[in-house]
Image (tube, rainbow, N blue to C red; front, side):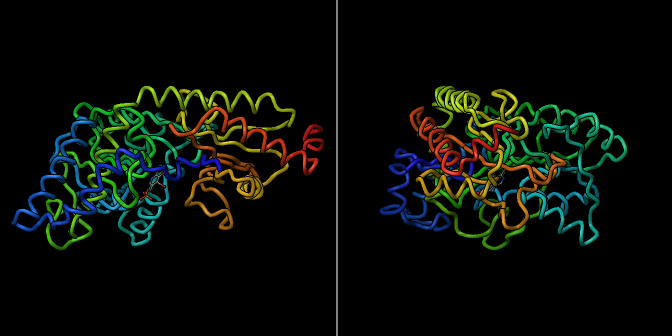
Length: 386
Ligand code: PLP
C-alpha cells in the first residue's frame, strides 16, 4: 500500500507517540486541579506552549490550543469580527471551507460584506487588487491562506501583512498547510491571527492552535471553565497538545532535510509524468512549480479520466491519493478551488501529496499504476490524438 495523501493528514511520528504515552497512562491529571497530578500536566501544557512559541517567533501568551485549524479559523474570524466591529472582510474564493463558510454565515446575517480578491490564471492573489480594495475600505479584516491545500500555491503573506499594516487592516492567515514546512518569525510580521493543525505535520488529529498577536483582541466562541486564558473553555486535550509540540519540534529540526527529500519526490514525479506518452496531462494552479507551490503537493488534471474514477482506481491498486481535498466532496459539484480559477468546469483535479515517509520507488510505482489504468482502458490511444 502507498499513502500519498499527506495534505489530508500524515502518519504520526514514532517520537511523537513516545512523547504522548505518559499522558495516556500515568500523567492523567486535570491541568486545572491544584494538586500534584494536575500540576504535572499543567506544566506539560506550559512547556508545549513555550516550544510552539519559540519555533514560530511568538510569545507563549500568544499561542492558544484548539481542536484543530477548523476551530482556530472559526475563532479567528468570528472572534475578530465581533471584538473589532468588523463590517468588511477581504478573502479569496480558494480559501478552505472553514474560512469561507464562517464568513458566509456573517454575511448572511448582514453583519459583514465580503470582497473577493482577484486571482490570476494560476490562482495567485492579485496584490494590486488587494491594495485597491483596502484603499476603498480600510478598517477591514483580511483572511488569506499561506499554502493552498488543493493546488499548493504559496501566497506571499509577508507582503499582505505589510499592506494590512499600511491600511490599518487586521490580517488572519490559514497556515495549516505550511506550519512545520516553512519558517515563520511572527515577531517581525504584522500578522494578527495564524492557525495550524497538528495532524498535518505528523502529530495527532483533533488538536491545533491559534496565534493571537498580543496587540489584538478576540471574543471567544467556546466559553466555560476559562481554560486557555478564557479563549477556549473545556478541559485541555493534554495528549494532543504534548503531541503537537513534539511534532512541530521534530518538523523544524528536520525541515531542510525533509524539504529536500519531498522536493526531490515532486521533481521526480513531474519528470516521470512528462515522459509519459499520455498527451494532455496538466498541472493545476502553480502546482508544477517547485518554488511557487508547496513542495509536497502535485495537483494534476489527467485527460479522458475523471478525478473520481482515477482516485478510485488507484485506491483499488492500494494507492491513496485524493480528488481535491479530503473535505471537497466530488459528488457535491467538485472542487471550489478549481471552479474559482478555471473557466473550464470539467477541469479535473487529482492531488498527490508527499511526506518524509514516501520514497522514489513509491513514485515510480504510482506512475506505473497510472500507465496501467490508461492502458487497461485504451485511453492512451484516445488521448494521444488530443
Ligand atoms: N485549513 C486548511 C488549509 C486545511 O488544509 C485544513 C485541513 O483539511 C484545515 C484548514 C482544517 O484542519 P482540521 O481539519 O485539522 O481542523
